[in-house]
Image 1 (cartoon, rainbow, N blue to C red):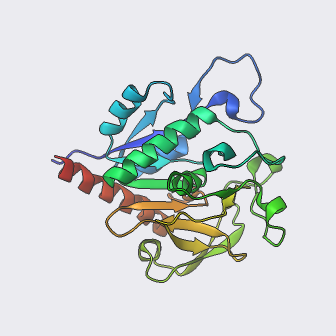
Image 2 (image 1 turned 30 degrees about the vertical axis):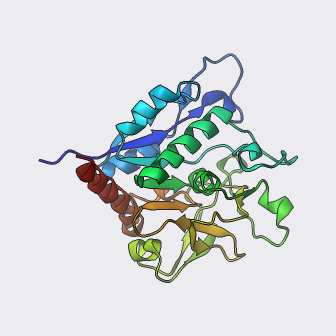
Image 3 (image 1 turned 60 degrees about the vertical axis):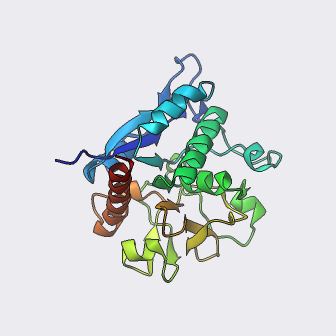
Length: 255
């Protein structure tokens, strides 16, 4: 019986989250939904601590992974892509930035499967040299609304807008629909697309909503939160299933 692939799921610092009161102990946390999303389709999730000051241990964790899942979360520090902070930048988590960018760059070098969700697509783009809008509403006045946050009263499964998938893309072959509605809980977004990425989906305003690498490497990032729909939408489940299948192939090749 073949072993199930191990999927690393990154965490974030508790105190980086808006609304967390002071005085709580330092903690690394992440929404359970991401771990369940990997488990349901056959992966074994591994919660990755933010050991940004211990690269040897972080590398040892990475070496035991067959795939990397980068969840949603707080804003990326614009210093990671060479910009000053915009006044409307939200909360940041520098330790998470350092850990996720390191893991992603290692995975790119090794062609280890990567799936990025919401913040995760932005990490992928920055890891490869791309840049981000720090606040879409302020920096792209013609853009549609993208920030349907639960903290503003919207449900996580609120379908905010459609995305159109690129013909011939890996994402289209997995999702089997040229367009469909998605939820939207972000105010940062891709500004300059990294050279080694291809756009796989766009919003009605032209903002890149999904990216992917070449055919030799399963690296897909989507700007929405598909983990919300995995249990109810078989097309979404296909995305997670293809990621786990790629991680299983990686595991077998690595021996």
